[in-house]
Length: 397
Image (tube, rainbow, N blue to C red; front, side, top):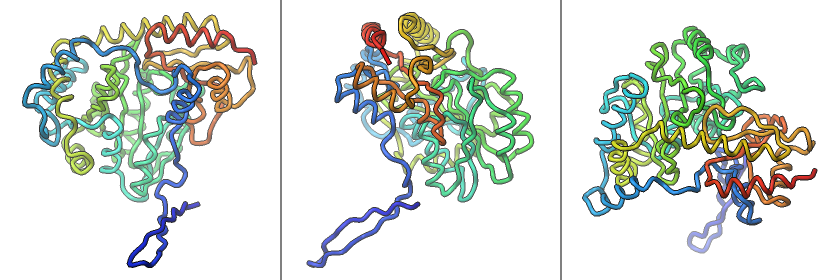
């Protein structure tokens, strides 16, 4: 049901009432905010929200300090700092062997969330449908609804591989966009070559469907690299690919992301981007541009693999059962063997009783599907991981 918001105003001494119909009536405070607030209230160790708590690379802070005294404090061009756009071009070529035009094929955004929002607002029209694969991050649905379009939620298999039969059953002439997330948040799953072959076959049947590929954890993978849509010749000319320096370089508060797309799509995305933010933080863009000359993304992946392995070793002393983690800095764990609580209630009790904050996986599903799973963020210093798992060892349900 529509939600009406009522406010009171006073004009020339006359009291008036204004009724506003909410465009997002069912959307409230995100679970990430709720759990972080509870963690603060109860002095809990916060393994819920996905941000690192260890220092940024000193080379990056030194570059930033130097640039703070230079002439980098005014608006950059709308699409991004020219030096950074050139570096993204080189990075994409080195990582995926894809040649891009920095002028026509990319835009630097205020984080990956703005890139996703601008893409959906620019390319999805009223009454069209967008397929979202659950469990899914919560930033996809709002821009679809604000476009007066329909989000169609399709569940992944319980092992978080794509259910191609279910996805195909929801495709139609109304489908405008399909959103995929690889490596996957919240589960850390990475798509296989077979998955992409199935995706290519499906989209051949629907040539007008745009693929939105959320790849913000692309450089945080372990036993195998993720397969980027940048490498898929059959897909990339109908795709928008979203990346995040915030995630890749553990500088989430900088909110610097970027989108890559063919010119005919990027032209429309830039139209929306210019009226959302016009351009994003100039100092951050300049600093990242210089930093890309010295940073090694392979070293970042190695560092996170060490954290993953250490956290899994520590968690072996707790009653949780750990699911595989192939990418991202999230670890999904099952508590089904020792508690029948809903994952939301279980997560709240972890905070209030044991002092550790996590995220219930059911909140990533439209229907609240509860498999008794929670998500831990292990992008923390070792002391934080050690203290958290010591608390989790005390669980008695």
